Amino acid sequence: MTENIQMVDLQSQYQRLKEQIDDAIFSTINSSKFIKGPNNSSLQTELAEYLNVKKVVNCANGTDALQLALMALDLKTGDEVIVPAFTYVATAEVIGLLGLTPVLVDVDYHSFNTTADIIEEAISEKTKLIVPVHLFGQCSDMEPIMKLATQHNLFVVEDTAQAIATTYTFADGRKVKAGCMGNIGTTSFFPSKNLGCYGDGGALFSDDETLAEKLRMIANHGQSVQYVHDAIGINSRLDDIQAAILRVKLQELDDFNIRRNKVADFYDSALKDIDKVIIPHRQYNSTHVFHQYTIKVKDGLRDDLKLFLQQKGIPSMIYYPKPLHHQKAYASISKIGSDLTISEKLCDEVLSLPIHTEMNDSQLEYIIENINIFFNGK
Ligand SMILES: *Cc1c(COP(=O)(O)O)cnc(C)c1O
Image 1 (tube, rainbow, N blue to C red):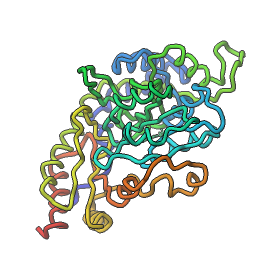
Image 2: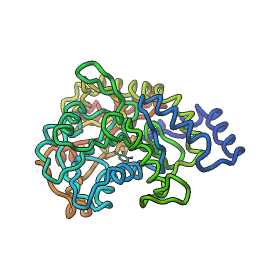
Image 3: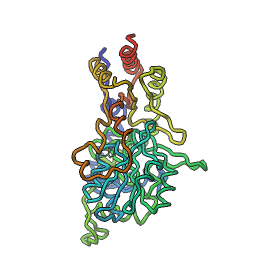
Image 4: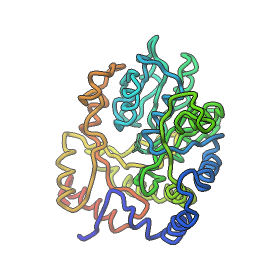
């Protein structure tokens, strides 16, 4: 019973990679190039190569990445930005901070992501930008979304905080990594993300080199030449110790995602026959990196299951308990772009189970055994 199960086990992962990580940290301290050091530029190059995108711009966190993306697109007060109601708050927060109007749209029940059909309903004269979120590790259906954006002359910023390395396949067979299809992709290196550092971090991706230069300028106090400020910017940097750690972990990223997929496969086969549980839907045109393994629990049993698991020492999380239109801060500044019943339903049904790169079979068996006891009494 002493399985010590955690949602994310960063300690065990560190122990496994300790030698390389310690090396990376201490060689950065030895060089004492803490800000804008060589690891930052190397990480940008290596990540751009990995993602097959022209430019990567590092910044301080995933929320800043979203803010920088919105600032670089020169949106004006009152411009509308379409964003799912079922997402982490950061996505809508920066929209509100910049005086733009979040237009909240529903998501698909199976994929947890919004779709072109839903977005289309919400497009108005004022719409300038769509922010699809690749929730839980699977890509939004980007081909129709990009088509819609082209038709209506809209920008697309992909929130890739939960889906770095996920691959989307277009109808013609072309494969593109999440975050590299819209004008800008943003990600977070928060420790628990699939590619996480040991503090805060974030990055932006773009195939538009002019736009990438602008992002770099805005992230650096709006200066392209030192002490020349052509625009009001912010100060958003990734420190070089974090960049050094991320360079080590980028080498492991494919392996991390294989490990997560093994856990997901295990859960899938063990839970697929429980009729009150809906296992995560696998989209035919996207891989899944399982940032979260999120089930839906029917008949209002979600909270009871969560409590039962907790009593057995098994953590689980509700991502997310409230849609954005039910959050006080967003209810007043947002516009409702579509019917939002699926988002509301999901908030009542979703439960994310422990998933990380270090899970072992006995932990998984223990979790499954207890889920079975909850539903079947055995
Ligand atoms: C984590 C996350 C963010 C924010 O990243 P931070 O680095 O914590 O600022 C934004 N969007 C989504 C979907 C996230 O999961």
